[in-house]
Image: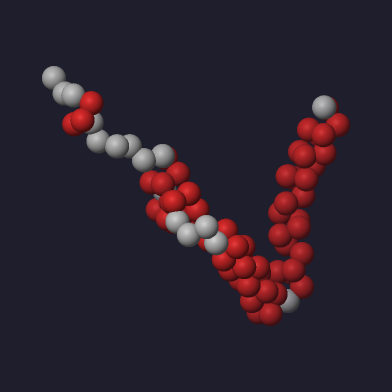
Length: 79
């Protein structure tokens, strides 16, 4: 029979995903300025993609997020 002290701590499922787990762990437990740095890194990567591939890299994120916007509008109108 085991006691509560011998049961290992189970981390949240998001922490166990290989690449995203490190980001989720840092966001939850790390430096409070991490979200700012993460957003800055994403914007910088997007800027580099625009410099390399041009206009398609500029508008493809908007095209990719169009279904999300449509779902948001439907949710907003349904109340």
